[in-house]
Length: 446
Image (cartoon, rainbow, N blue to C red; front, side):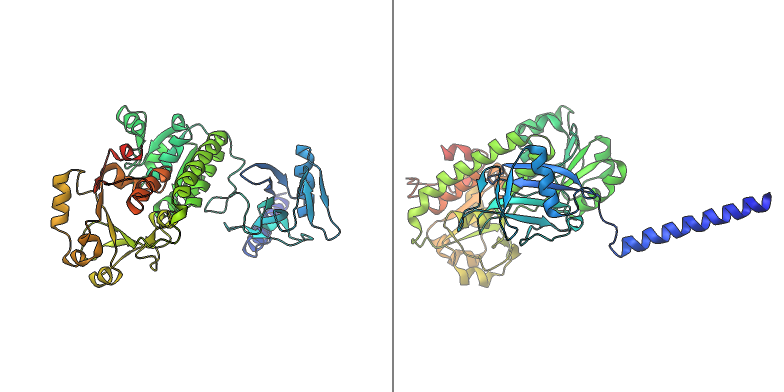
């Protein structure tokens, strides 16, 4: 009897070991596919319907379209080439917007457009979108910077934000009531400061060095992170094992990034209606500002240098930066648009590019005439040879205005209003624009 027991035990051990080897080998070879995924019908302008499907039941892309249309009562039609030509009475228009299948591949973040007859293996694409857009468009954002779908989260009740710009987004869509923790630098709107002072919010560390233990102390069910900070990515990886969800938001370099982040936060927190209201407001205000300066397309307003501090080798904003994108939208010329990102420059390059306007972002000064004069008195000598200095076109952004320029977020229209007045004062009928701008910057936008 003991011998039989030993044999049975040995057989079980062998079988278990074989199963482990099989699963391990399959995983290493990429054979194991995910069982569920998100299928989207995107009618454009963030008018999105989504559903979770079981890929065992819907193994092909067309099966997934059948599934989402059946669940939502949509009819669709396909031409002889296998292309979708209509969904729910919205028809493809030759030369205009058309229906196409777009996918985000496993572990990726970018949309990839597929060709009919759509033989794509859906098990390799956790997110599929049947999207209605023109030749230059793409579907509405559907994944975070980990390539994970932003849809399908349980109701969120307790949120931690790890970045000031993210905190501003949460507040702007009227979701402040969900916040239980923020980073130390989140200080806008003032409601956030009040909540922290009154003990309603836990401070979970600095922006770049959030503390995992403090985050857990806040007992969140969702943590919003910034991909720019490696510390945030590490924390997001650890949170899953603690049963806490996280979303990694994109580094906001463009206006489109900001809009995407508002949309993502709205979806994840269950405040999509508020998010869309805010997005529409931003787009309307932005269009109003841009329409004022459209007639200046052929004007030459010189180049603007946006600089952090007053070091001999300061960091300036090049292309692919938040403020650089705003300058471009305002039809301004960035004196350092040939650079990529925020980069340090030497004195010779300042003289060579010879900006006609200089905007200094600083935390070392207050918005007073005395401190502005003090700032001018210590300008590097080479800057004094620029057209900006000779014509008195040097501006100091400090206090809340300085924070706003360095925090990509929902105050982008206010930033556009300020920079628009600096770059094109004649459009805004200004005879004098203050050279130092701080906490009272909103009074200049009236």
